[in-house]
Image 1 (cartoon, rainbow, N blue to C red):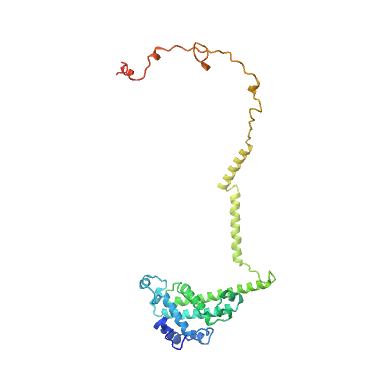
Image 2 (tube, rainbow, N blue to C red):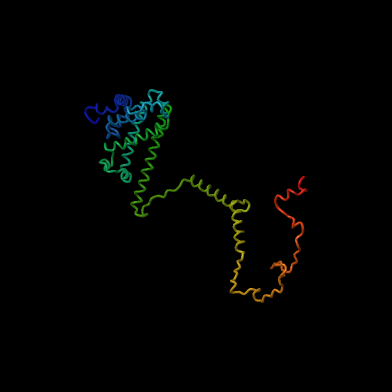
Length: 319
């Protein structure tokens, strides 16, 4: 606990946190031993157990700040698991185990200079190569994300399924840590080599990935060869042929420059124009094309032609 009187520490978790602590001490001594003399002895057991209980209560909507209507309407994927009354005890146990594993992983990361440099943010515990009490917030944050997203987020329906998911996640986190440390060490060797003097093994793709890439490239090459062949005409080939034909027709067309009239004398202007000997008939009173043409006098039909009401008096029209 943080103080000799643990009442202040139980203030946030209440009786539920006390009941969870009693369960862990009486039923899970192996996990408690990790806090007393094991790999997580740097963290206080009492305050850690209370914080984990508060975290679980928040996920299960048991906290005082939870809206009751929101809790009634919520559809969590893991609600069916809590038909078993021992489900909440199993979640507490697995969450405490995850927290211990996170503390161990953080200690291994701090021993790698490249990873320790990435985690450094000016806090007092960042200068050490081992886990201290100042790293408690980081450990609790990582544990909270794993329990919420990976463990409960998987939607277990029973307690047995919950334990099975936790076992698979533990192996997954260990493999991720190994790869992370390996990449960090390779980066350190490259930095020490100063431009290629270090003997870092080249990373080669697995044979399966190489076979898949070869098959994909072969399929792509065959597809493009079919498109180019005349046996499989496409819209692109027809469009290209039409454009080539149009370009050829444009190339064969000739443009004739017409010289100005002042520079090049025309054929008609080189010969003198013949005088028009045709004289207009003075009696006709017309000129031009009507010259020399006899015009007949108007007939009676033309003289008697009229437009208007006179047609109404025509006896032939009154039928």
